[in-house]
Length: 275
Image (cartoon, rainbow, N blue to C red):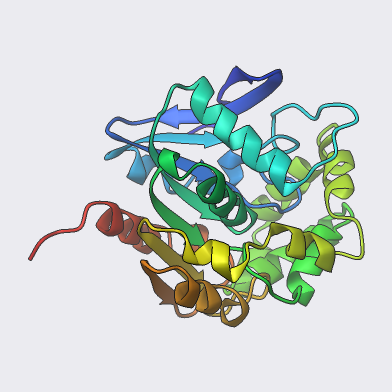
């Protein structure tokens, strides 16, 4: 997987995405950190999962290399519509979805609107349920570009604090955050007070209870951005066919800190081995 993928027109939005593999279609929706893109979120798991699945990893409108339409008012409805329209543009009638954090909330809103599109859901460190905003998420959404601020964010994202000393990682994420147009659109998405943006992404308990397909929740126990106690513990009780796997010694970046284990959980969930 390389940073530059390909583009497709999605109802007038020039949408950047990565595609690889064969088999069951799997849509990967990234999170909402500064400078984030599908490539930044999924580059480590793509080579593993593409051996078994047909992967699509788009940059959601306003993120990465997808369009930032002038005058757009970003919202969970805009992002969910973009992903639904993306699936129609690539002519996929039914997929499983992996949603990371903010991407998990998008996946849940797709499930509410278009359950016909979904086989199974995998929600990693997911939003989408009422919870008080954590200090970590407030810091992520309030990011102002600097190397020091990016280093501090990586300390929040990762359990392994040595990752913040990885100059290449800090530099990569910082440079991504200052590309033309990136910070301008990012700062417009989640202005303070930020609790309202968490609330807007949440489904009601009744809506979550109506989700009828299998759901796998994956979470890092030490997640400081989306605390497991406030989110996945609630989701697993509200979604009828949900199971939860919590990784110890792991922060918000499960797919980066526990790459092989995360991919193994996904594969086992999508293709369970009958014993």
